[in-house]
Structure formats: structure tokens, C-alpha cells
Length: 295
Image (cartoon, rainbow, N blue to C red; front, side, top):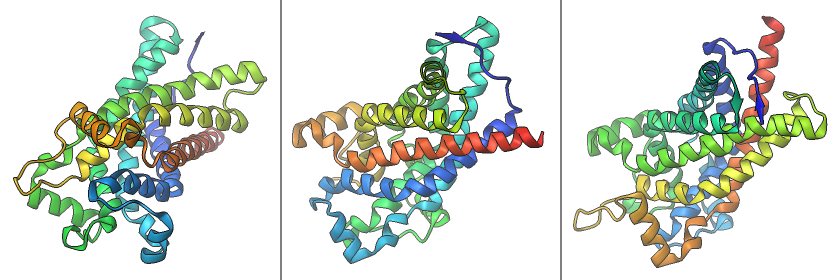
């Protein structure tokens, strides 16, 4: 299918609306992310994850730990992922004279990888702060907030720690760019044609976002689990890290826990992915409608 992209928004509006949409969506789904992270990492501490037990002993507030870091991450990650995608897509359209699904996949993957690498520091903070309460008391980092986590990671472990686990994060983000952003953009055209909807109407945006969220959560969960383990790990008594690369982590988890060990916490992860995709793109659509009326 080939179609022309809409008239480009000014870059600052494209990035700003994408960032605000990402932050708004993240505020809704952060508890699901905390559940997904803790469920995924529970096996590394030898304590099975039990949501009822967590809520009873730690309270609902524990699911919102790391929310600030998550919002800062979305400021960069969502803004760059969607903003760069639109910029790359429109530039490629000028070169090729058309925008098809292959173009969307290529530009979505490139934008996702760039956005992930830029937002790695906040991703490490999110993973650690979300999972800290599940660790034995002696092993907890007890970060006071985003700035404290950022400062302590630099002083205690070095700047390079922020990019520990960056490979699976970037790999996952490339796939998110393809299977969330590019697929969403393509599905809006497909559903509009099939269902007779206006492309950017809220019903069409909602259905397209739900479908792309389902697709990308299923595809990226193994890389999400890998990224969480590499970002949250600590060196053993011998000073060595248990996880050293994407394939080594996937192989180790598969061997010790089975392939489905990579899908622990998938239910919460889908609620996070699908929920965030819907909330983000609906909010982006509303913000851009408001901008169009004001322009």
C-alpha cells in the first residue's frame, strides 16, 4: 500500500506532542511496568513474585516507584521515537516519492534505535527503582529519587553503567519502532479504508493503537526481559556479572527457566504496552487537533 504522508508538523510541535503523549500514557501504565519488571526479575532473587503479597506488605505506592524516572525517559524516548520517525518518514518520502509499509518499517526501526540509545540512562533508573523493594534488604540501593539514582550510579559504578543492557534495549526499541510506530501508522490507513473511518479520528486511532500494542508486546517481550536482567544485575562474589550479552542472557534464561521464562510478567507487560500505546497515540492525536485549531 502506498500513500502520501500528512503535511508535516513543525518539528518542535511533532516532538513536543510525542513527548507529552508519552508522559501522559506512562503515568497511566507505570504500575503495570513495575509489575512486569518485578515479575521478570523475581527468579533472579529466588523469590516468586506475588502481587497480593507485594500490595499487602508494601502498599499500592510501591508500584509507582520510579515514576519520575519513567516520565523523564518518555520525555526523551517517546519524543525522539515518534518525532524522529515522522521526520525520517517525510524525508524518505521526498527522496522516493512515496511512503509504503517498507519505508515505515525502515524509518520506524531507525528512529526507535536512536531514541533508545539517548534514553538509556533513564531506563536503567526506571528498572532499578521499580525493582528495588523486591530485593533483600541488604542488597537494596534505596535511591531517594531520580536525581539521587543518577548521581549515585555515576559516582559508584561509572557513567558506562547507564549503557549496561543498552544492546537489548536498543534492539528492542528498533523492533518497537517497527511493530508499534510503523505498524500503527500503517494500520491507521488500513482500518480507515476497511472500516470507512477518517484516518485520524479517535475510533480509528484507538483500534490501530490497540492492534499495534498487541503485536509489539508479543514480539519484544524476550528483549524486554533481557534488558531488565542486564540493567538490574549486580556482580557476584567473584566480581563477574551474570549476564553479559543479549544472546548469552536469552540462552542462560532458556536453559535454566525454559523459553517461557522470557515471558514472565507478560500479562502486565501487555497491559503496559497496549495501554501506553493507546493512551500515548490518543493523547498525541488530541494535542495535535488542538494545535490545528489554534494555528
